[in-house]
Image (cartoon, rainbow, N blue to C red; front, side, top):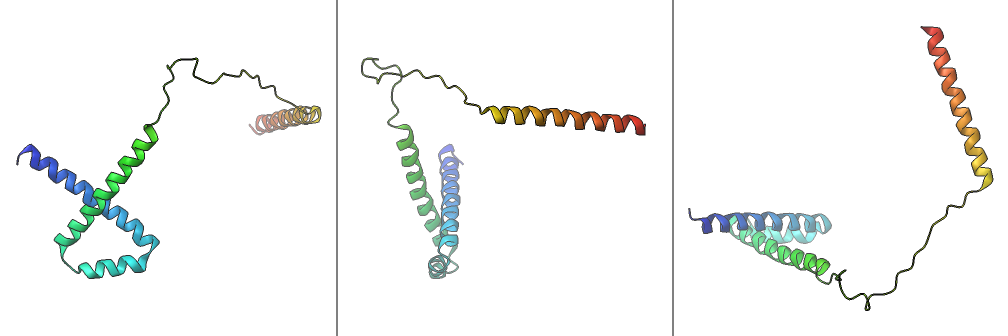
Length: 126
């Protein structure tokens, strides 16, 4: 086997698998349509493989275009600063309700008391 043949075989296997996965997802979404499509193919394995490979090739192309569209128009952070919008510096300050703070302190103290009680009970049982 030449390296080109191995590469082609692996690529075909990948596309058939991708096509099978896409077809499975379509079958889950629309079982009636996919049932009719597969019954038309019958038991011809080579036609089924060709169909799945074609579907996988289309899916691969669509996925590649989607990824390219995500990474394509990325802005250059090192471009001229005159063309970039001005930045605004803000400082976030938490706003705490005094009653919430006192409730939190009371619950913390109560938790410490319960923990101490548990430690005392453990020491008494030993």
